[in-house]
Amino acid sequence: MGGIQATSDVLVIGDESLPHAWESFRTAEKYTMVIDAITRFIDVVTTGHEQVGKVQAYAQDASFASFSWAASLRPRWAGGTGEGVLAAPKEVATGQALIMALTSTPMPDLVAAAGGEQDWSKIFWAADGEQRAQLDEVYVQFQDRLRAFSAKCQEVNEDALAAFESGQQNVAGKPLVNFGLWSHDPQYLETSVSI
Image (cartoon, rainbow, N blue to C red; front, top):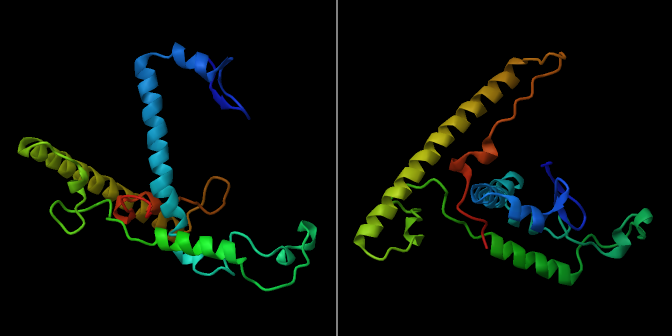
């Protein structure tokens, strides 16, 4: 079987289209693929958004980060004159204001102490006290793992900064670039995109 390849209209795996190929996978392989897809989605929604920052800071200024400027502002090669008021049309500015308002609500931090102000374990519904205790234990274990991962991220970040500040070079004699994991460190992430 070949690798997974996306085409313009059909996902192809080896020589088969996805519906036919999907049937050929074992249940464990399907499970792994679904978990990978969900994990990728969560990664994009959390760290992907965190990487670019919160949108409300950009959406506040319709002249700086407009989703669409007046046609006259566009460069000549794009059919505009390059002149005019530096602001979005009112429909676009209104849409931007709505996005800014909806995405500026702070969400609880991903790393939160059990029982603390930002404890989000209460979102897990429990049928009884026994199940509540089990869910609370899972939450505590998850938080412990997040803190352990955060500590590893901090080590990588410190190493990246030390390599940069020391002027280390790679084998080609160029500055060593070792990117840190700031955007993946759970201590800086919120539980969801604000909306």
